[in-house]
Length: 127
Image 1 (cartoon, rainbow, N blue to C red):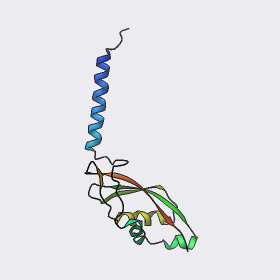
Image 2: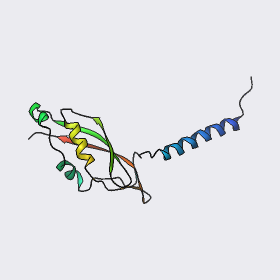
Image 3: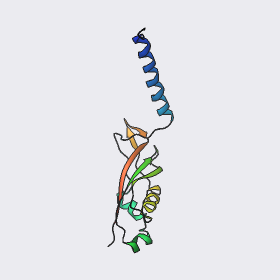
Image 4: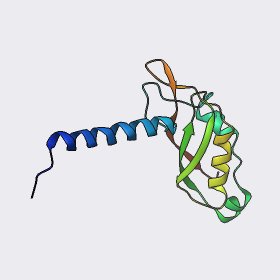
């Protein structure tokens, strides 16, 4: 039984790595972090001002935190929002809608704007 040539195996692995790296860059992947992370313009206060506590959640006494992953593009706009952990009763949807209306500062690496994923939690608390 012949052993594969180590140079041949290395060349295949290298080409797979380069293909994967180029494909990811072409797909416009969002970075998990950046040197300068995006932040909501006006802070979280501006996000909360865009969120209305759902009436059904109020009546049911639903409180808690909704954990979200916000996809911010290189212009500071929100492209997508995904719920990591929700509390239901319309709170998840209200948090998503509030974040989609929010403008963010631009995430940057070495001064260049980049697409970044940002984790944000929205607290729903009855008073």
